Length: 297
Image 1 (cartoon, helix red, strand yellow):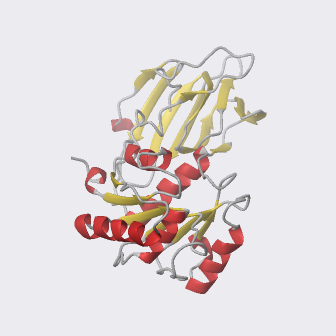
Image 2 (spheres, rainbow, N blue to C red; image 1 turned 90 degrees about the vertical axis):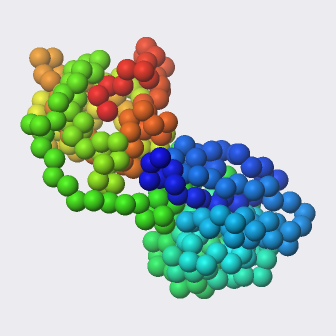
């Protein structure tokens, strides 16, 4: 059993939501054990009692609450377990108006259900650091790739994923073929707990995206171009491309050139993980990308 699979996360769903939805499923895909009890919509006291019983039975490492579930999370005795609150509806339900110091709040300024100002007030009343409020998302649901990745990152930070110092040598890392060249996965699959580090040599990488995996490319040699979403940029040695999760990207070397670059990827996941695996995102005039043959990532 992996270290992450032994970590329990209590997820408290929102009003008119049910267990097993997108967010708890996304967190389960990270490898955590997700506790996701059904909470009654019309009886807040009963919902709090169910959540408290689940917490007392399993002692999760972190509690995540979405909207009304965020209010439930605030109203249980979670001891020292950190809270991750998604657009918490604390003004509508419950009596608690402050949260513990290690709480993280995610909220979209475009939320038309729970005002973003409520989270600003909660942060201020609780004396939280400015970075405790994570501004993300396009609406109340926080169901877009960036919001889901931010939720997972907040849980990961709250859990305190183990990190280790290490030194790895590129010349001791075997290369392997990829469809357009070679890749050396020097630090990968979570080793070190900070970021994956891959060195890639390719002439072309078809358009794709990663749903929950951020990347930074640092070009060592060669010239060419990279397209991020719909914008194309030139590449030369020393170029850095920052590619958030969910952004389609592709690149191609100039004629006679090979692009050699380092990829720093986070969170550090195996490349066959659903969040890190390249997903097809063809341009209107492009041939489909085969996700079973990633371009070196």
